[in-house]
Length: 299
Length: 250
Image (cartoon, rainbow over all chains, first blue to last red; front, top):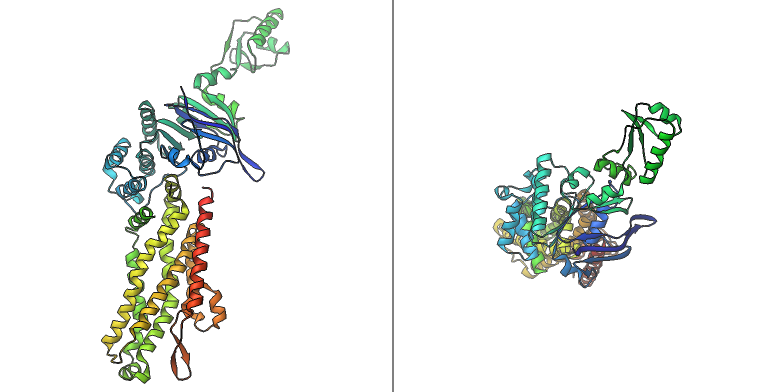
């Protein structure tokens, strides 16, 4: 699978403060790339750099295999739909009038506009002023504006912000169906659960650095789940000086790889501790992320 | 630019720009013509020595100096604030329309509105004078010349206000500047010309074709050179400011 977005050592600094640090992103074609990180981790700045709204301090960006520079920028951005921070829309105009402005701005056909509107299921509200829209409708209008140009890449910054669970589910289904139709979607969120259920590839940002990038399965492979030793005599095990805490039916240990596990079992058996079973605790994705981001508040 | 201008005209829909302009034009006409109903003024409507048209035009100069800065500030604020509120800057930027281009298009669109409003209010004032019974023939060149110069000063101030409204999210700043401008505009008629020339609103006095003498109104040559220099400086500053807005990060 080739990559639609690649960045090399992408960095943004404001004075002495580094907001994005040496980012090497790889967003595969046709994927839903979940861009995760706590608030203030640099997600929006990264997305703005991808859209040329913010100038990188260092590093390169390639979109569709071509370097992003002053000459290529207009052509490359024509293939990118985006929704950055808050959804756009002139409140005093109707949805239809807003879409007409986007249509004229981008030189789009009526078919492209009506297709985008029907994709986000907003047809029935097009004659309402945007001022009267709910937040969910505004988000959908913003996504329709991004979709109207039939982009090959969709960059969405927290598109489910402020939506109710039904609205979140609707957006999630929409993005998955767009990816199934061949559009690459990069979607950021500070809410793990939202992204987990739609993303095929994950990128995790913490304090401006890319902590992890890969599939969900790769993420779990990278983490080392806690180990639980089932024993009727946990006190005796702890008395041996094993770095563990009491668990429901035994003791629980962190950070032990396979070799460490074998050594632990040997030590317990030699110490006369009855070992009924040894198992890894199934970590939730949330726990994995909390470990990765240093418990910065990703929820 | 043509596309950006068309977009601005479309965005104007329901912004009540027309109503705001019409209300301001009505206010200017009413304030200027208020004196036409006084018996003292009416008694001199057929005597050139009483300078009825000069009196009316001087009133127009004063009222314009007071109201134009407010009108320009309100129009600029309405047309720009929607970009702040509706994420329009970002929407346009990713479509290839930078903030500088957007500001130029806004000046062009609002300039079209002013290009209708200023001649209309001038014509209405002249018609009001004729309807009130001034039989002394008016000087069309003087009225038309003043209307053109007034429009040019309005456009220059519109550039400054559009830039200010784009640069500062809080539109109260622009509106307060307009109010201050109205104050400066009126008092510029009483200022020494040297001081009026350094204030943007002072140009409402510089363009006046009339001055006050001991025996009434005097025809004076407006400061064409100063006006031209002012327009050039504003155009250059607006161009530079637009480029700086384009370079500004979102």
